[in-house]
Image (cartoon, rainbow, N blue to C red):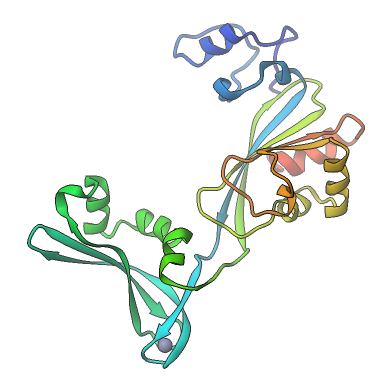
Length: 252
Ligand SMILES: [Zn+2]
């Protein structure tokens, strides 16, 4: 088991461990971003990171010339580029889910080549699959072109154990959400930690569940990248046997 030495972390020790120079301060290496960590919290915390990846990209509804009505469209994964002198157009090609008719979603139009980020230009010219996938989750851009965007709640989740104090009582979850997904925070926590949403709300009302940011109603809002959830489990004797494996994954 990985744990911090009884003497808690000092900020200088924390800085040292972030450098390549080996320091024999800890009993083992713990993977923590010390720059943002509250050192005083390290001694009683189990820290995990959840990476949540949606399974299906949002589908914009647009007028389909083949169907003669509004229909949901899906990305084909292909980019179309059109050069006009020193100006460039780029579109992501979508297809109607009913009739396969295409719709070109503008990435940009009539843009000077010199104004385009070289990395973006390279991604567009090579039909870079990762770049295109990220763009299919660009909700803000989709909303500019379509009044109705259909989103899907299905997701994959990866759980990492970041650090574990010997006698931890506080569970700290960091959400890594690289693509926009329509999942409420309380639904995510209830499903993954196997507790009811009303119990989560009770913990929140009692100050035992805190979030960062701590906006009003955050439990009912969609999850955001970088959100932190801290749950005080001091009163739960089953935290090591039950909560830990649910939070950190079975293999942790
Ligand atoms: Zn159609």
